[in-house]
Length: 272
Image (tube, rainbow, N blue to C red):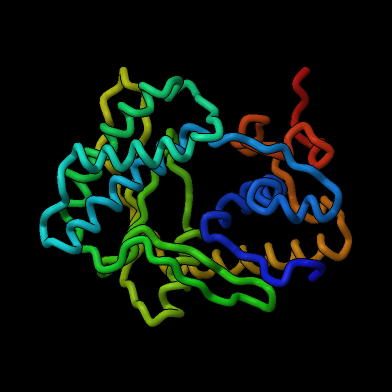
């Protein structure tokens, strides 16, 4: 496998790979492209991802306190401070703003609102057993799955934020496999979704959605197998067509794809 002894499969890359394999490789595994003589563009963080990281941090702070001290989840102020610190770290080297979060001031207010509603509606009802613990599992020779589920109670729970809710079953199938490989059994998979909305709109209530465990596990295994097959083929041939591009993806944009407009990808719609 050329100079790479081990390639890490992140559970979060699974849904993205099924949306656009070429974008995922260029973004999550740029070293593979560089090995073959291609140079993906370096992109700053998107404000959506940075806001999401901040809200995650507030949830982690709250649930760790609860796990240690019973029902105490700390104060909103301290949780939001932790969230803003995480946000600042994520955007330290630049950020791509969008229409929903056009400025830092707006993004900070959104983080505060979303963190509070997570704490009051979700964190209060959970009994956490494991929080943000990383696990690894050898999937096939030269490939390791590595990930850290948000929260384990009697089931697996994951928090998602964003303007649009997306399908993340492949990610959760890999989390389930990681937990099972370490002797941890969960009876359910639940996604807690908090929508990121403009400040001139009321904050929607969180949505909790259940996923079918068997379907998630099957989809994750199939996606992992395809990723391994594609990467191995690319390492042998250097053929970029190994990775299927999806120019119909909502993320097909120079704002979000490091391959867009480079020699790596010419299949996206033109700008003229």
